[in-house]
Image (tube, rainbow, N blue to C red; front, side, top):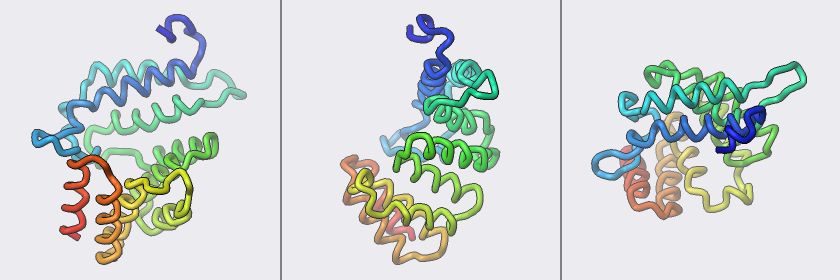
Length: 194
């Protein structure tokens, strides 16, 4: 409705794009057992291609039109979702483009959650070492206090760096912080498997 009422408002189209692209993955986000399925493990054939295509069309309408225009936060987030949607396989994902979009979003919003997601993208683009430095800079960030995904991301990076004991402790900490029972089970399994 907003896009119909405000057809020239690019950020409205950015929000539509973000909603369509995120909704396109709903069927693949949870396994048959009810456990969450990480993005890179999702069956992409279960993504709704109609929603993906509508999201990509809305994203195009959200892009800057002139040299003085800038992308808004919804358009940037939709751009990130679009990079995932365009990748036929997880290996095809353009992680450097995602890292750049997140860096721009962090500059624009100063969001600690966006900064954590930026670190994840950096880990995929260039490796876990530089990403761990970024995650550790967020330690003590008030908005992330008690945020289980900070510990989960840190655990994953430590695991990839071969620092098993530290990784195990982070996964256990993350499991203790989440309120979602299925997510807790996944995190405890990660702790056991390190």
